[in-house]
Image 1: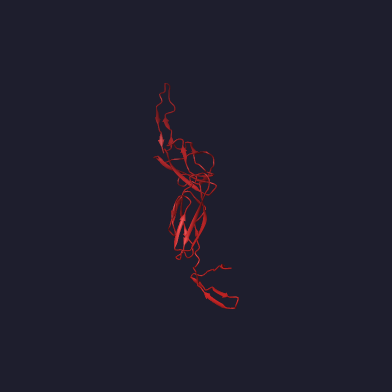
Image 2: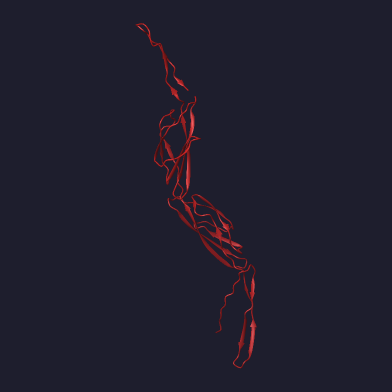
Length: 239
């Protein structure tokens, strides 16, 4: 057989040299030999990490974990590529379902050896928080109706006022009211926090103006001789 093959490995970080030897023997018993040299370069291995899954929009930071690499080429499966060792890039998912990106890394060593690997990056959709206030501004103690217009909002948490508790209410319409015992109108913040089944969240805050408390009072002399003229005096107060 004029052709033989052999596999040489190198698990070190240096170039290893092997010296295969060939012996030639004639039918008459004559023999000769020759030696050659095979250089086996150190192995290059492609590897990287990126936190996954993540929520839209995602500013992804890729960390190179490759061995013996000197050149890097990343294909992010979203029309973008990079030759940086530790690139950072935005991933978007405006849909209502998770999207998977097959990110491929190809590396080369100084000696020209090549390796590649693929890691899947999952981008989950983000909910959008939104609500309307039916009547703003409003009076002290007046019922206020809030309409939840959020999307992908599996869990809805409300907060009425700066120091109010966080209340989970998944109804599309929420009733509340505010009290104002001051002399001037007050702005009360209304916050809505929404979460979807993938753990992604969004929040929105709107201001609710509430007028001061009003109390109707009047004074009058309530008895006298007929014909009796009664004078009523307003004591209308804004407390």
